[in-house]
Image 1 (tube, rainbow, N blue to C red):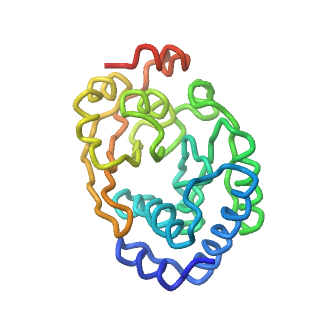
Image 2: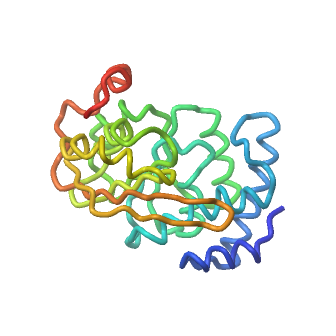
Length: 237
């Protein structure tokens, strides 16, 4: 399905080592994406080489700029077809990953993928604004990520409540995320975070990627996250 030798080379370029087991898992994952996509809209990207670059290498780039401790607790908010969460797990099976999405059909697909690949992760069918109030998930994670979900002030309200104090929120954004930061730093501070740095990546065949590394320095006030309608109607500023 995919050129695993090419994936190994491209991963090495960003400092990510993939062994033969991981490469085989990525190959099977790609095969399952393409097959399932015939009946369920998982992604518009279905060509093997595009899956390799625009989903797999792109997702793995997070490992090149964020330090994931052994057995770190990670949640992928709005994981969709498993990007970046499943990719992170294939590369780092030690990670304790929660894959959260509001669409059950996608999570059923992910459950099938994990079963086929022999990997373990928690699958959470929930909306972020609900899970973020749940004591089992609120402020429990070392690293929280989300890929191309929403602009930063909205995304921060959905995601920061999951980050434990001392942990990190590391959303994967498009090239112009700096502009979003200008209007969201007050919101991030209100939610208990502080932007430490912004990492700009120029990935082969993926274009520019921006990862905003935000540290949780204090607890998120209990009123956040608000209901989804409130977040949409009046984003934090």
